[in-house]
View 1: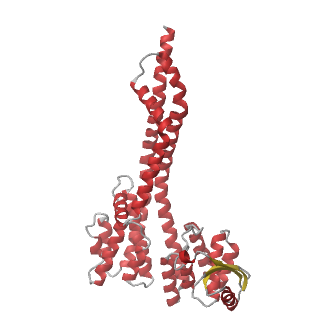
View 2 (view 1 turned 120 degrees about the horizontal axis):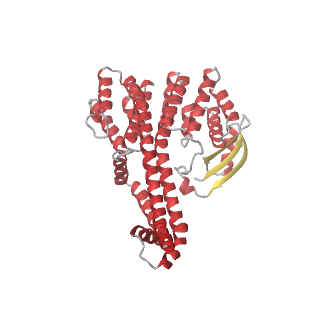
View 3 (view 1 turned 90 degrees about the vertical axis):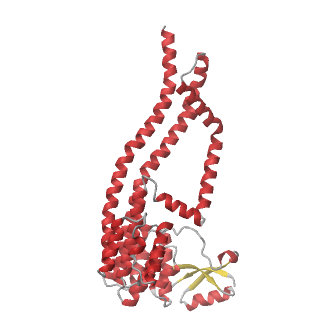
Length: 405
């Protein structure tokens, strides 16, 4: 059955764009009218074999910051007594992000057609994660949608902070590393060669460091393209390897063992597990389903396997904490607090406390890493640039001394 992309104006005067599977164009028009919309344009999609049952893998255009801001607005409007439809209409009119506006218009139309909020969100899965969809579903079932939206706002706000902390810790070293490579290539390509003919006219042996730098400069000038191609090939192979199960496990283990980032990466994953699972448990999601949803927000295979084991433990009557105990990737404090939470039947509260504890630890760790990395990166940059300049200046000083004599 073919697919059609349509554009229509709904009862709220918003333009709705979506994809519909139908036998023909007239059926699409009929369905649009049945949904109280005015059809504006209907186009059959030719690549139906690629689209069938799949979603085109492109960016949503909505950042996590946009999602946090949307949840904040949504909660405030609901808290003020407005309905879901009225709240969405106000947000649609105020938002500056055209992509978010499009998704919210589609959600509003689905709700107008009788769909519950969680199903409308689920249809826009590029923007709204499964965790949020499941939480909204629970909120609708127990009649606490406002509280759930607030919980989601706090949750994603903390997740955004954790992500920004990790990126902030790595951004400076990466920037300085790239700057070092750029300055080095510039000196070797444009500065050092200008002195090469002068050194050749001197007719005397050059210092070892100078000869080495000249050789490197010659290599960069003539063979740099091959070096770049090798680097691109290496990155491509690394990305292809990452698509395999062995590759994902290899990189997951590597990230948890690299000296500088292992602490931050480990704490980041533990914060996600603790905050997500505690949020789910506190909103009446059962333990096994909560673990399955929590797994979906993780990318590290090591921690995904731990949660798989924890899920199996629950189904076999074994405490969750046993999956974390004595595991090399899990801090003993985390495993102990989970065990205490299970023994006292306060696992949700304990996980929330763990999340807050590691949040504070993360801030300290990030600040320490920044202070540790700044002088090291500067020393490396100064050493490389200084060595190149020294290699150029030593023969020049020698030539000046010979001229004076």
